[in-house]
Length: 46
Image (tube, rainbow, N blue to C red):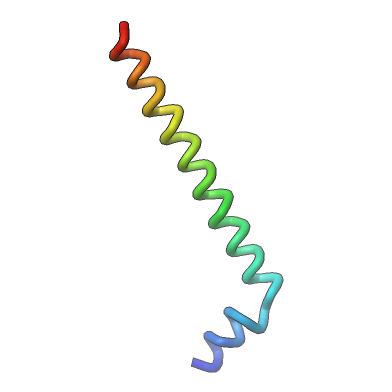
């Protein structure tokens, strides 16, 4: 468990990088989902 603690909390730069990647991934997925839902609603209106 000590190794995991060192990886998670000892390497702040690595942790920040992981958080940045996760945040970017979540934002991209959310935007794509919103565009997809909006496109489907537009098709339904026609």
